[in-house]
Length: 315
Ligand SMILES: [Ca+2]
Ligand SMILES: [Ca+2]
Ligand SMILES: [Ca+2]
Image 1 (cartoon, rainbow, N blue to C red):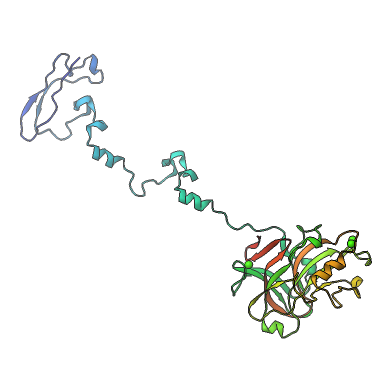
Image 2 (image 1 turned 90 degrees about the vertical axis):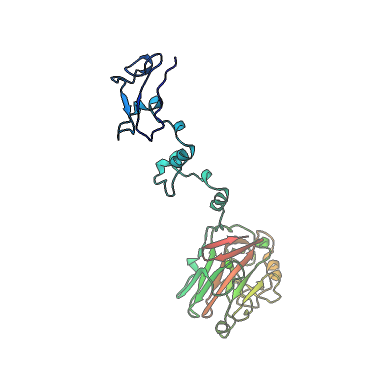
């Protein structure tokens, strides 16, 4: 069924057009025009009177997207800058990770350093005015950016920092290379052999000594003032290892006697029977002198422990 309505065009000069219908009239209502009622053909006067074009007078009765210029439609559909102002306008209501650029996803999934549990002040071994603090340093730390700052106010004070959980039950003989880096000062050195120690609390299991507890302590010669110095406690030729406790007084490696090298210490502890067993691993200072310095890059058990402001990491 063909129907015709004269498209309103060529306006510009005033003239009159009579709407005509071929076949079934579009005006006055017909089967094909059920939505248009109560209208009769009337003369149209140009130019059109303002507000005189109703929807029913447009071809197909409405302006669809296809009737509009493509560029205009694109402009209408374009999202303006800052045009998305609520999450309801986003697909799924949220910007999920998958919606982000791959480079941004990579940044989001970049893993930071993992810090270990169970490292902190060993309160059982703190006396008086002393503290151990993981912090940034004013120097170039040997590992990372931070270090373990140690401070004792006087010869009467003591502090220890370490791990009382994760090394318990390990064998002393399996410690491998033991060492650390120390930052000390001229003021510290002026007081004597004034260094922080590496101290493992152990069950020595030495048959000749009735003791289930001692601290296996390494105290090296003073480091160079105002710089970081690395110490290998297992190859140190000095007798810088000792066992604490009155039960070990007058024994070969007593801290109150001549002390031992690491090799001598392992030989002494290797007396048969049960092996010497670890209880804790710590860095300690005191009681001997006032001290202010730092420790980093603690090594034992095939690992290196990095003391940083945010925690202790291992490599
Ligand atoms: Ca024992
Ligand atoms: Ca033994
Ligand atoms: Ca560090």
